[in-house]
Length: 275
Image (cartoon, rainbow, N blue to C red; front, side, top):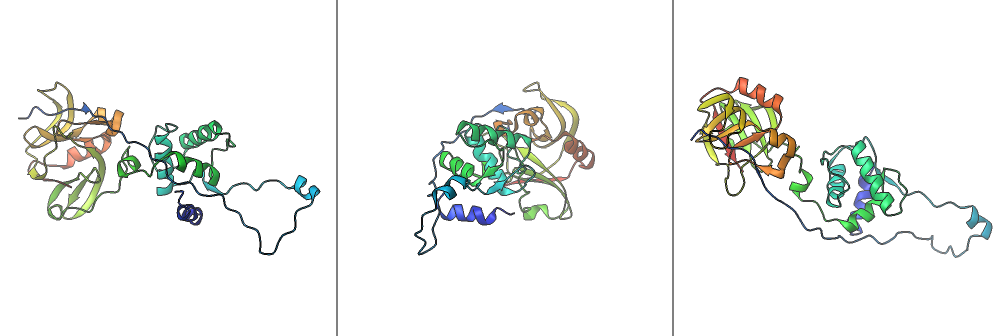
């Protein structure tokens, strides 16, 4: 990306939840922002150049525009960090996605305007320095608050047979057959009070239109693997993302993917839940 050199320069300057089933429950999360060091203004003069510009030259000279780091259409981990920081100061509520789209442009414009900067919607060095001062370095959960993490390295127990390989670290489910990853989707788990069990299990019953007898909520495409814990579609996950949690089930929010998975998975297929 064209901004990597500039970004490194800034960094070097210090700127930088019984088959009854489970359903969603609310959880709260948050973090306290700690400002990071700001970069000192740069600018040097050639050695020996002591001459002062003439009055006419000073009057006609226009300030040099700051370098643009990211703009609409850009993608990557740097854009994801920008979005996470904009979320910290409540200028962005989507994502992070890693793609600089219309919502990011609008957020940057708002941030700039509030601080008297030109409302360009592009992130230049001046805008970035100001944002760095007001935010802390995003952690993994902040960078992937809406999902999108790359799938984790498969657990060795996932490498043979037909397996629902579920990583708590990357919050992903991979459908694997004989060591080959055929599908990956975002998932969420139970809260600390109703944790999703870890270990090796097997799908023992499938229920396309299941309704929890405990919580009386819909659990479409349920594939039970341990007591009342199942992999199933969650409309709450689709709507609220990681702002909620299950009562131990493995929630999937992509309905098209869970529908396809439900058709492929058989009773007896292995389920591996691991960190």
